[in-house]
Amino acid sequence: MLDLVKVIITDITDFTATTSITVIMSVMAVVSGAGLGCAPAMEPVGITHTSAAPPPTTSASAAAPPWKHEATFKKLPRANARRFPSTGHLFGRYDADVFVNEPARAVYAAVGPGHALPEGALLVEVHLAKDGTPGPVFAMEKLSSGWSFIELDAKLRPVRQGRLSPCVECHAHVASQDHVFGVPSTGL
Ligand code: HEC
Image 1 (cartoon, rainbow, N blue to C red):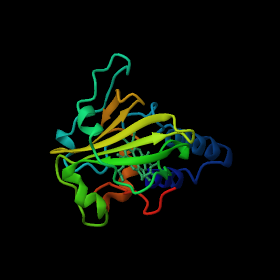
Image 2 (cartoon, helix red, strand yellow):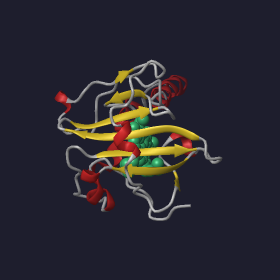
Image 3 (spheres, rainbow, N blue to C red):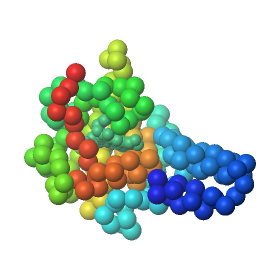
C-alpha cells in the first residue's frame, strides 16, 4: 500500500501544485478507505496460495449462523500472561486477550522470523473496552490455502471472513513471521 502511494505520488510530481494536492487527497481517501467495514476488495497480500483461498464473505450478523469454532474457542487457554492494550486494532480503543488452539500453541509462544504456524492453527483476539465491556472479536485460521481472517461481533457471530482488507495488508508487515504479530511480553 505504501509503495503504491509512493508510485502514485511520484507519477504526479509533474502536475501543477493544485492538481497534485487533489490527487494526493484522493490517494489518501483510498488509503484511509481501507478501514473496517468499508474496504474495497483488494489484491490479497501475504496469503501463500491465493488461488484457493476463500473470497471474503459478508453476512448480517443478526442472521448469521453461529461461528463454527465457537465451542472450541470457549475452551482455549489464553496465550498472553496479562491483558494488554491492543495497538494494532480498532484505533487502540480496546484491551485484548489472545487465545490459541493446540496446533498453534508452541509456535505462537515463539513468534519470530522463520516460525510458520501449521495448517489448523486458530488464533482469536478478544477486545474489551476499558470498562470491561466485550468488543469485536478477531480471529485467524490457517487453512491449506493460507490465512483466513474472521471478524466477529461481541457475541461471536461472524460478520466477515476470508482474505479481508485491511487485515491482510496490515498483517503482511510481519510476513517474515507468518503474518502473526504475537502478544507483547508485558501486559497491563
Ligand atoms: C493496522 C494493523 C492491523 C490491522 C488492520 C489488523 N491487525 Fe490484527 N494485529 C495487529 C497487531 C499489531 C497485533 C498484535 C496485538 C494487538 O496489538 O492487538 C494483531 C494481532 C492479531 C491477532 C492475534 C494473532 C497475532 O497476530 O499475534 C489476530 C487473530 C488478528 N490480529 C486478527 C485480525 C483481523 C481478523 C483483522 C481484520 C478484521 C486484523 N487483525 C486487522 C495489527 C493489525
